[in-house]
Image 1 (tube, rainbow, N blue to C red):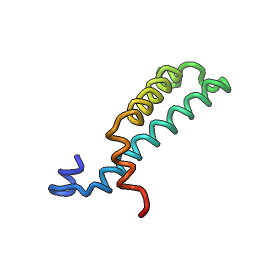
Image 2 (image 1 turned 90 degrees about the vertical axis):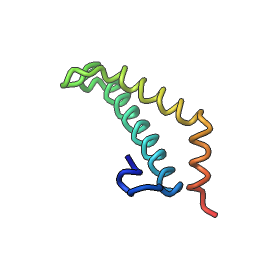
Image 3 (image 1 turned 30 degrees about the horizontal axis):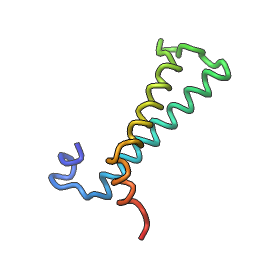
Length: 82
């Protein structure tokens, strides 16, 4: 998708930022879901019928898989200062 948007080659730094956004978005969503379920807000099913705890666990597993992959570590290097 980035290649289509940029019309070809995507800089490594930009690709790395997108990977980090994915990680942070999943982590925030999971934490929000756990917060919702812990304090009984819409527990355990949201208004649209989604199981909040199951979705939060899915997001945490996806974060864990992403961080455990060497792919993630390589992207961190592109974002490190200096």
